[in-house]
Length: 223
Length: 319
Image 1 (cartoon, helix red, strand yellow):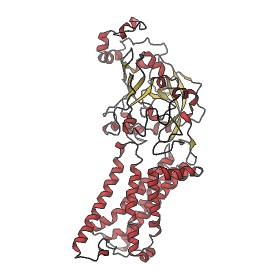
Image 2 (cartoon, helix red, strand yellow):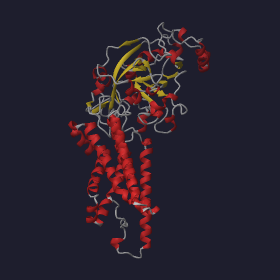
Image 3 (cartoon, chains in turn blue, red):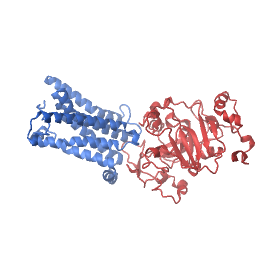
């Protein structure tokens, strides 16, 4: 793949990631369509769903790269991860500022402390903050193996995100969608588990501290 | 049979047994041909579902709220009607498949006049009022809706409930051919709800057949639904096909799905939170992107009218 194609694909991925946001803006401004009867809820749902989707895609990059051998994919992992963070921050701000409103900040604190699904969602977002903050290549290089360890938190975020979604459906029988996410995440975990086991089996008695480390991404990010 | 010897029932009011036993066949054929005498004499200004979709004579009720009424679009495109899907826009999108004519309502249980009645019979003697009520959903959003209807009590009295009728249960239609949502087991179908007889007979409790002076759109529960303005929205039953009088507290669909979250009473109460979210405030739809939530009122603002129904009842336990 030539450098030019990488640029084209990157632009396409940027466009795809920004599309849900752009569609919200267009509808908010009334240029086309509308946000419907409950605009706060619509923004909340679009941002939450898009954030979760991007988070799942971010988590899928490594297993897909390994099974297809398409190593260029890694170039999109950070981009998708940061866009997931972008939408989840918007999701939170919509809830805190547009829905509850600044004046209801005590309710916000109460919700975070007392409503389990809010607690879980807020925790997930807080865990994403250090990941977003350490996503530059400079910091990644400086942290080395610790960066990999730190960024394993994203699995926890994925699980918490789905729990957050799961706990707000109205009836127990209405879990089809969060269940779909849970199955997807379980498949990703299974793929990683299989990978570690095969790595483990191949390595002839490796030093203990290297046993569970995933291989470092080999490429130099292209720019 | 006490029912037959009840002196309050005039012999003329008793449906002949042959008619009763074959009532469905008779109703279907004869009503269509306009031959069957209705159970009750038809009033001269009988309410019917108008062909042009616009009710002619709707009196303004003087108890209506003066708050800003939600737009027809908001009221008819943002609905919870799980028979047509769990998304708020699903009912508006797919409720066109519901056939509301012919329609009949089965009346069963502890009442003198039970049987199956056509929608025309149900509506005939009543006069419509426009009542503007606040509508508060358990999900913490609210609207202001101009309903067209008549007190449920006026209808229920015609069935002459007996002293055994302590509760009234309502059932919605559950036809998977007309209602795609019924194909998935999201709730116990048919949708069922219930009220105490006092709640059902309360003058605020409404049978709605229209909104904004127009025939009720399918997504809002056509052709007839209940409206109980001091309770969360799910307590009202849309597209009613059966009314059952009973001495037992009836099963209700949401209570069956999650008993810890949706109680039998489900009165609007800012002090009793849903286990997962606060009920202290609500989002009034149609007020714009930057408008704050408003405080939720006890009994949705109908305390003066309904608080007496719950005297001595612990509303925290009886949520």
